[in-house]
Length: 215
Image (cartoon, rainbow, N blue to C red):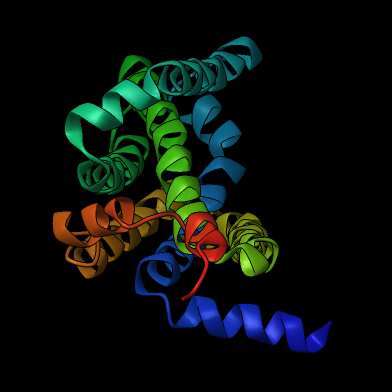
């Protein structure tokens, strides 16, 4: 089992698109979970919301997720997978900026709604790229490695949000999240260029390549 895990990690480390996707998801999950960990405090102290209002913020995000899942294929086909990823990175930055700087419930609710749409579209693109590029024998290992990185980011972020808010103020996790989101977008913008993503979708899926007899 140890050898198989190492094999999966080695393969992922050598696949530029999926490696970058896994790393940036891990980093963005750190800041996202840090932001959500103290959102209840932000909602009460800065937005003046009750428990019902706090729940409505998450309803906005859930509504965005449902809309994104319902229209996802059509949106991605219209703007391309490349711009789905790139716009998603900007939405991440915009969410942190709205939470850090705005005292408007409407602005924050819209930012969470947009993030919900982005999250659904992101999952469609990320999963389709992983399933297309990963050989069938490594599907489980690569998927579990990606999940491990994402879940690890969640765990770190849950602790980090409270520490930052306690030491530097309630908006500190959001400013940090904004800086990280901008940095991640700048560092990965060219990785997800149209040519690389189009080539990934144009090549025959790894499953088909595996089944094609070798002469």
